Length: 209
Image 1 (cartoon, rainbow, N blue to C red):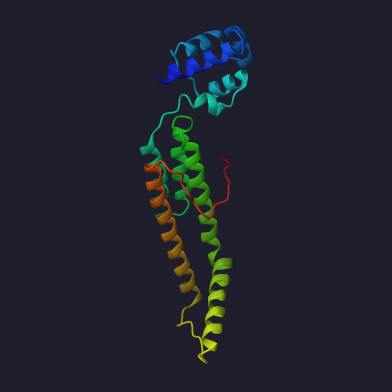
Image 2 (cartoon, rainbow, N blue to C red; image 1 turned 120 degrees about the vertical axis):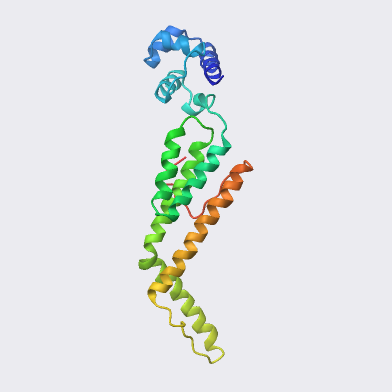
């Protein structure tokens, strides 16, 4: 069914541009037999073949390959949930979704969009995780200390940090970050199930859509 859809798309685009199968074969670098088989739905072209066809037909690969992509919400949910592997080791939250993405790239609708958002967030999360002892902790707890001192001084009270050391401070932030990551993954899994856009914050577009 998918092959027939792509074949019809290729044939329709070719006819609308008034070009022959021979010309399309020459422009794309594919054999005329390959073009004929694709248009008849006798073969399922790979990503490279689709890109050659899209260049020759002057359309974007997404427009052309979108006809071969299937909707698989369950896979998208599993891809999103695979980021929970960060619990065992932070980098797994990046590597596992990336491997699942590669396995279904150009085959499942919206897989690129979901995978890139998840991976971008997990990359940002890992960076922040390792910056905690150096940057985040001093800034956050420095602000808390200043705020508490100002508030308590108005009541002629002194502020004590309850004996927390620097390692305890870092552990508190790490625990909060792990909880935030888990929260985002679970909430966005429900959003995928409801066919809504997923939202991850903060996130930098290391992988652009």
